[in-house]
Length: 464
Ligand code: SF4
Image (tube, rainbow, N blue to C red; front, side, top):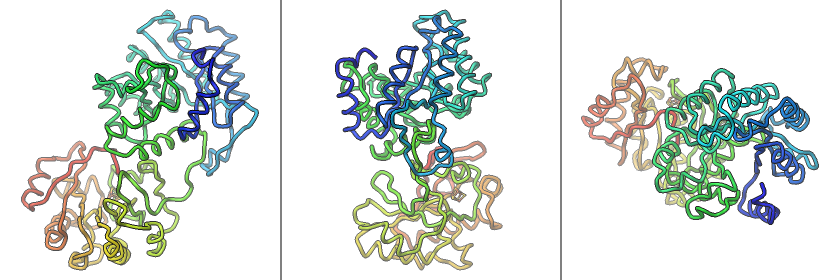
């Protein structure tokens, strides 16, 4: 873009200095697509997309289509290693790198091109993306109905709603199609109520951030020319809205960008300890005695950008080495992709070790500990565990069995007994329930009130 003509190199350097790992520069017409290709040729950490913005749809011809197709065919990244999730960043020095088709879509705010032509050009570019196997960068402004219809017809399931400005209904409908939601600088503006709510509540797995530079500089720099390094202000705001750290949001959105655009490696090994906010989580097993319908293990290897799929269960010594100094964390939490009390000895050994070093211990459990070990294990945890969080998950046995498919009979009844017993040995106890159809939260609350423990209501698909 001409806005960067005087100091483009400096802008790129500032992006690098700000810790940006990869940058996607977006084509919106033929000229900017060529510029985008050129930058991705010159810099190993810059990738390009090629496409025609709805503003310029009126100039789209058969030749334009052929040109985009030629670039996409010749320069798309086709590295088998990336498809196999190998942990490597592939740098194609001296060759352009096309990772997406776009920006394409519909803009009924400015109507710079006739709407019928915008729709036709949008359809063509979606078809091209499908043919090339590339994701699409979608612009949609005041055109919700037509955007959704065209996307649905196209069958596209890899792409991003760039600089999202729609409502929650639209966000949900595009996520159902498998598309990401990208949040830009406007989320930092004081009046961004709907966007703020969306940025706060959508699942981690669908969240991306962007600048839309040179436009839409975030709050502290509003009105100035935007540039990639400024994305940190947007990240900070989203972290604040979601109640997580800047580091968490950076990791989550970097992972999502890598997955969508296939521009880098993924962690191959599951992490045995992982940080969220200021707590450290221990991933000691992927086994569980439930098969909850909402369990993240069944559709993703990741929680808050951490790979938790273990190939082997860690030993106590490996976990100690990975924890380091437990007093550095607000608390150390036994959690992970499974039921920690399946490994009771490790939980006990590590809890003592953590407490001796000034750390605080929490266990997140499905409450099956006594069923698993066929004895009351709670007295064994006395003095080693500061808090325990038990997944109640339903208001009655029938609903619990339907949602959680437990390996034991009478599991729901036993969980209630487990919580009652836990109160005698563990200072802080809470139950959790996920908000979902068929679960009566008020009846859950009645159960926990009778037990005299807190109830935390979790949002469906929000983990960690
Ligand atoms: S209890 Fe937790 S780990 Fe086990 S299936 Fe349910 S959600 Fe997943």
